[in-house]
Length: 160
Image 1 (cartoon, rainbow, N blue to C red):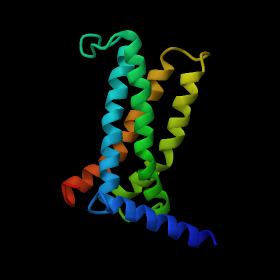
Image 2 (image 1 turned 90 degrees about the horizontal axis):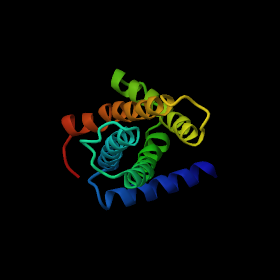
Image 3 (image 1 turned 90 degrees about the vertical axis):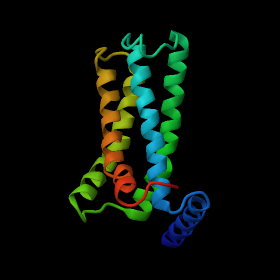
Image 4 (image 1 turned 30 degrees about the horizontal axis):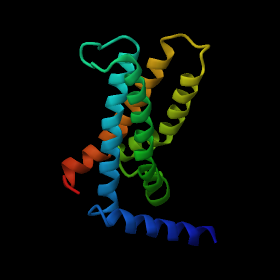
């Protein structure tokens, strides 16, 4: 029964994604690119919140916090169809070094996200811990993007 349900959900997912994109892999690449773009916004606004890059990110203090929060929320939303595709359609693969690295990084991404959210809400940690965890999250997302979307755009096709 579970397999039938999963096949049905995967089929609906494929129908939805191919109504906008040329393939499900193309949708994965573009959603990952959107998430990475918002991760850059996260790094810049996070640095601004910690008093760095004030000349680069000229958003006043209460607004930069809001931009940081919402860019993070939307970035996580953009990762959900990517995660669904990777977990339920492709699965953990070891066909090449790039694919293996991508599978391992993908296994870590939501764990790193959970640690980041923990440190956002925990006030009993050293001040340097949150930028470290946020930077780790951005690094993992960048490596995931480089081993998937960048590879797709440079080796398969650049387009929807």
